[in-house]
Length: 69
Image (cartoon, rainbow, N blue to C red; front, side, top):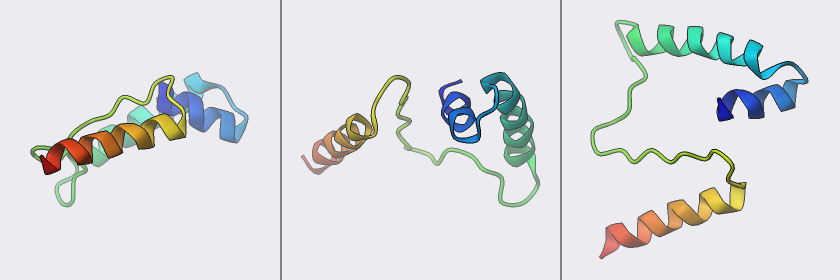
């Protein structure tokens, strides 16, 4: 819902409307026969709910530093 909330703020529409559209698009994109959008094996998902851009960047940097050890 965070992704919908952020997009709705950009567009000036309700988060519920955006979430519905995103669900339809995500379903279509994840099940198409060629080039389906799926998380890569070993990918790390970062939940950015309630985080600022700087906090997300800090988390990514932290993960990168940990991967080098």
